[in-house]
Length: 125
Image 1 (cartoon, rainbow, N blue to C red):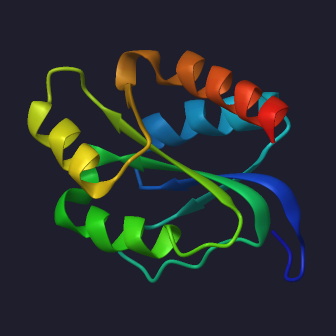
Image 2 (cartoon, rainbow, N blue to C red):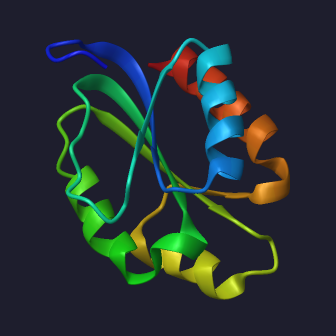
């Protein structure tokens, strides 16, 4: 993203897992959304965007999830938070719910479910 560039709709993947970033990027781009990836261990720099869907790998963030969610909730634009987790990982699913994640998607279905969410989101904005 160039300085000063404004994207109407951005998917922001907060994580390092390449096996997650590929399908997330593909879902975003297939639905006409810009894609950005940030390292969760670095300060959160939010892209200028009207609509933002932030996607988290719940197993990778642990307790750092709470301050990141808090920061994202301060945005003035429309923001949806999506957590990715294994369906058997009840500890991380509960942590995501406690942090205020809007939707938790199982890793095995993330490509399809994220694409559907982005499609639906774009048509109600």
